[in-house]
Amino acid sequence: MELNVLAQIITGMATLIVAIVLVFQLRKQNQQLAIQHKDFTQQIKNQIMDRRTSTMISNHSNDKLKKIMDIGRYDYSKLKDRMDKTFFHQMIVTTLELLLLKNNYSEETGYEKTLHLKELLGSSPGTRQAYRNSTIRQQLDNEAVLILDEIVKEIDEEVGLDGKLVIESTYPYKK
Image (cartoon, rainbow, N blue to C red; front, top):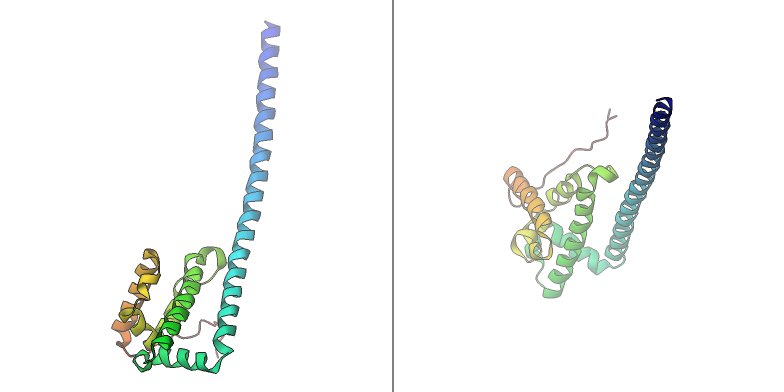
């Protein structure tokens, strides 16, 4: 009988040791997942920063392009040339995709969900007009279209089709 009890004790201790080893392995896996998540978050932030920098440099390196973007953002109907409209559409799609990245990964990156989309679309009646009336929507995925449709509708209802939405700064220490 003592041998039986001794065998049970040894089996129990072996089971406990295996359980402890598994707990340490799980902790190590969780630490590695946390590191991977942090790396992923940084990659997204870097990608957003790189795309934004690239877009800004290309927009501001050419006076004609700056003028097209400025005219289109505020009064899309003034863009008459087909090539100007095509350029404007592609730059808006690029900008929207960049802001949608911020929106889609807001939890990971800390960006406020939809704020940047509302700022751009709210301050740009021409961009909203182009979004509503051109093929910009067709160049975006379905999830993006649902998000943008809702934001554009909300802004249009609040300030009208040609109005500008003023979004206040979120800086907390205003005087």
